[in-house]
Length: 379
Ligand code: CAA
Ligand code: FAD
Image (cartoon, rainbow, N blue to C red; front, side):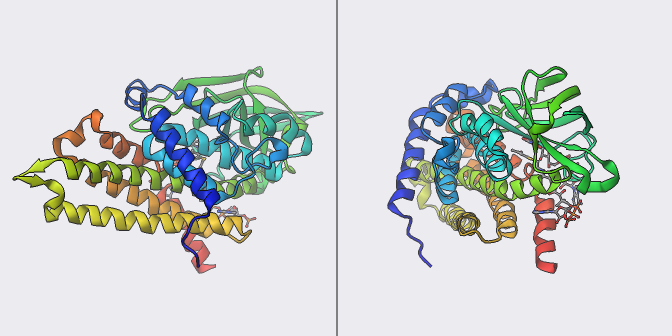
């Protein structure tokens, strides 16, 4: 077992770190306050190759491994988890799903532009009455000749307003349960496709979350991904990788809060010495550093298993479950280390604390991760 990162991995990590500090940090507080999408920053991330990192270069991607992607996600999430969730959805749900299961035509038409960040993608599984219980899809797609007629509502869709391409999961034969669910590529602007208002959220406030309404939307049959009935498997397989990205996001949020706390504890004086010399603060820093390192090992392990072509569903659920808990614990303690200053926006940790919570909810709640893990253990 080798715990050293390669030169290439270090270069990716450093590039992401530099970008986060030079381009994401200035303005992150204002974007959070105003719930403003980091449009310009996402464009730059595309130019730097962060929006299609794992895609084969023949489809305009970076051709990198999952570990590189995780390293970049961690660095960007230390500063701006709103920007990093857009990146995560585009990379590990949309690009990965299309590259793995799409036709050559679909890759030519959509993947090539998604991989450069020229356009953004969204992944649409959740519905008002089908969140954790994702097999209870109400959205329907009925085949009529050479196209499907799509009707239904999707909820909470990241990149919902800013995306151009939407991967939509829908029932094609409700009598078959989850084996009657299919996946489709839908374009913004098609007749009957309406984007609801942007959600006003606790955290990741810059990210762009919307409901989507489909009324008799005509979807060409060639825009189905895989066979009819493959959609639920498509969603689950895609989410197995997506959860590694969100685990890396949670790791980054925790590591960012820790780094702010470590620096602050050396500067802030109380009772005649830096607070870092009080044992109560030292122990908080020790707990933060230890749990972050444990989370990092789980996240890297899931990424490496995926890169080695081994089964990673179980490892990615464990990484997400643990890293998201660490993100919550560490960010709450980071606010405590900062005292009153931690409670105001200027010191960043209150934002990270608000951002941390979503990592326990999306791409499968912590309870759902425990279902995935326990089924893996007991099967
Ligand atoms: N990998 C591969 N296949 C899986 C799987 C996984 N992790 N989990 C389930 N499956 C397969 C099962 O093997 C089964 O297939 P077969 O019948 O062919 O064997 C099928 O899916 C149905 O599984 P279950 O019988 O276990 O169904 P269930 O209803 O009891 O449980 C669930 C399914 C695991 C709870 C699933 O519904 C789930 O993962 N829910 C969470 C949904 C989720 O993660 N949503 C995220 C939305 S995207 C998002 O959130 C993006 C973002 O924020 C940025
Ligand atoms: P519910 O499923 O109603 O769960 C409520 C509570 O019950 C949770 O604590 C849950 O863990 C618990 N629970 C449910 N079932 C069980 C069970 N069997 N055992 C134990 N506990 C259970 N979805 C997308 O498809 N695409 C996106 O891009 C996307 N982005 C999102 C962005 C944001 C900001 C948010 C808030 C959500 C996003 N989601 C997205 C949706 C997200 O995946 C769902 O919110 C999540 O899967 C939970 O579903 P739910 O909200 O319906 O909660």
